[in-house]
Length: 154
Image 1 (spheres, rainbow, N blue to C red):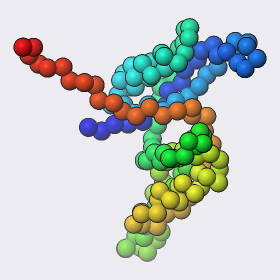
Image 2 (image 1 turned 90 degrees about the horizontal axis):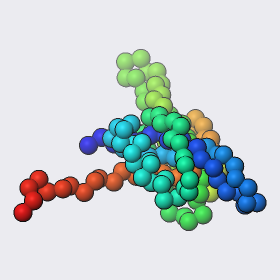
Image 3 (image 1 turned 60 degrees about the horizontal axis):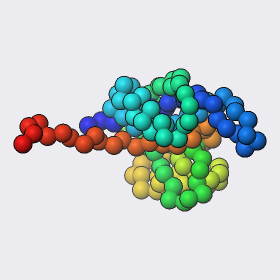
Image 4 (image 1 turned 180 degrees about the vertical axis):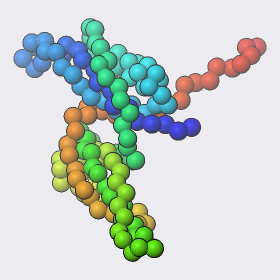
């Protein structure tokens, strides 16, 4: 089973702190097997939290190598980091970099940097941080395997 991450956007009318309704678009990450399943699961996850109508406006594959969650209750932001793994070509002696994207949950930029360092500490090869940017991702929904129905009822 090879799950992938999908970036899903939803548009709906949100009640602001002032009591006024405002159309907003929010981004979420959904772990799923396919686009179809990502949309179905995303709608299931969002339905209890949104009153009224909403529209899934976009779903795209997020090319993430890793997702690092924080154990801190205050970590309410998501940061995307580009990490380059460094390898030496034995024939030419040239340095080769392979870039990958990771998602990090943190309270702020410094916390994201600390969490990335902590999570990457066990990496066997050399690596460098190319960049870290804060995202507008609101939450992450992990893959849940559907309950299997028995093939034959007794």
